[in-house]
Image 1 (cartoon, rainbow, N blue to C red):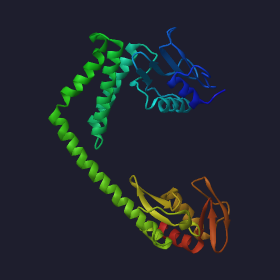
Image 2 (image 1 turned 180 degrees about the vertical axis):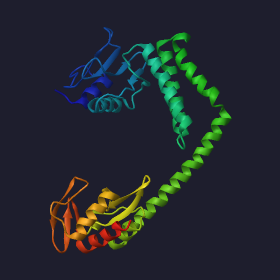
Image 3 (image 1 turned 90 degrees about the vertical axis):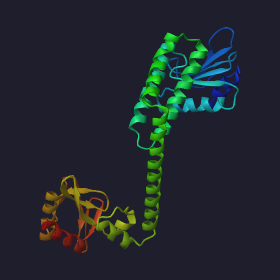
Length: 304
């Protein structure tokens, strides 16, 4: 039994021995052996068809399982650099009408994304042009009649009519400006986070407690998990430095028990149980709180 990559290689180079692996195989479409097809697991999923005479490779755009996706990548790699005109379509072995409808659907989907996009209009515009180019090559290969190709022409012409050349230029120029603003904002945030990462642990914790957007390392919260009051969707919650949110009313119930020293059987949110407590700290779930810090914060919670 040979590997999937070797099966794909044999298919691409028309090697007639060792035709298949355990989950991929290929064969000839007709007795002339000028056309061959390769499949993932079974004939229900054709990855590609090579026409030696026309020097054309029809290649699937379908998605399926993770393993089939790997098979597709193997075939794509195997045919790379070969002298074939690769035409992408939904199902290389399917009916032409189904593939034409798929091209039309792709154009419609990308046209909607183009109209909604804030910064990626150029990407969706390229996808529309690429899909239309593949559709035209598919039409030419199968010598389809005008009426058979009409679904693609209709949606492509509609998109062009609704987005005149000058209008598209304006949209793309505005989106490019927005993209640069987003990129500058992202770089600024990266620099801010890098600077915070170099700070002392106590400084990061203090910034977090003051409400700043700071990522705390596990070591920052190892000896004492910090707490802060946070407004969330119109009400207050208590947030821990390890990302757990506790509703204010539940936090006040727990705060009362902490201040009275009633730790036995304590739970938080009905999920996190007390694991250990002594004069120095209390362990609730994976959270360890310094006892003095916890009592001080409990007093603050009861005043809210």
